[in-house]
Length: 303
Length: 261
Image 1 (cartoon, each protein chain N blue to C red):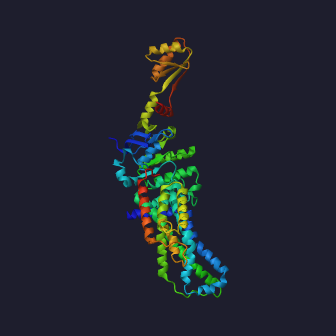
Image 2: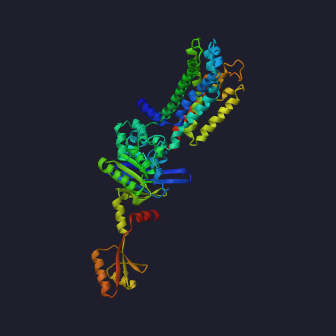
Image 3: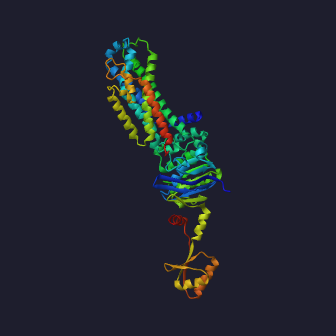
């Protein structure tokens, strides 16, 4: 049986009686996973995360973290959770060190940990510079340092790469993968871009208009990708080629003068090609058309 | 709980570093004494006679407190309390505060304690300033004697305690408003309106129903020709009652709010 770090049961939320923003969300984040919580802007990602962390009062449904109901074990569970919701929570008039120092006292972690996390996110040399003078990327990294300060076993990050340049995105991605691999930290990361997180997540949940449309492993999503792939043939006579393909028990379609077949084995493709040539049909190109994950993501949302 | 409260207080104390509120305490504490010193140095010819008066310390105390009780203390408390509560809204950090492993009770009272300690700091600095405004002209102006009248420490401690109690309703109501409303102008504006209304109602026989009047009444009670109606109640008890009520209301509103960042 899979052990979940976070589980929500029928989480439903209304901002007003007529505005349902979440509908029966059953989020299941396995322990040790990096879970990508995906959806377009306004899908309900941040609302879900705020409910999970107790920043919004749960109206319907339940939240379990490490198999314990969050409401009844709030203080105990918050000790093991690091979070960054929306923009980083920073005191602009304080330095990076001071921002961490005030939390170090609450979490009672060793003082040395402040320097450790600052160095981990590359902010060790910011000295007396105030957080308000930080660039967007530095603010984002300090937000991550705050979330990591107390060595949490569960990290919740809401769009942590927002505002980062490509290099910054890669750095954050590598850092999160390292934390997951070396310290076995479970990470729940929300994003509106699959391409941004597909290189690090093990599990994916797709939410749209407040409903969960897909939830499984990244592998499962990739299988869907394969299933939705096709083979495209460009020939001199599309209609005749379709008739020949039918002899191979394949049922192709003609799209924009090209024949589109479902994915079949390489041998069948080779034999079909030979047959077409023998029948006097010129074959100009054979391509495998692979939908990228982003397209699958859009398909899930649009369907 | 006590340990959590101590750590939370330490954390809140760090947050006020370099804020306008912390500067207000220092500037507010020395503002009136600085003016008194300058005025005395300018009119130094009359100092000798004044310093030898038999009721010198009481008179000096009242002179120092006039602008403080009527204006600087209420407005300073309004500003400082609102600024401290606004730190979280301004930096968008309530969500971080509320995801820390601290109970809402600890958070509410530790932040409040920061405000209270700041006001105590202000009283200490102001008292030091009052003494400095006597001693500095004594050092700088030749021929000015040290006031021979002994200092009635008990009287000054008692008066400090009264002023402190009398400003508690302002702290409590400003704290409630500051926590409740994201817009800084709501708490500052409401505080300022109440202060103006309090000034205007001093001559009204029921003026004491306004919770921001008590510092002013405490000052005016010693006036020989009183500019204010004499309250028919014990204003210090009224101040404590109002402070308790606002504090309880603020606490309930804080712990029951639906959105916590």
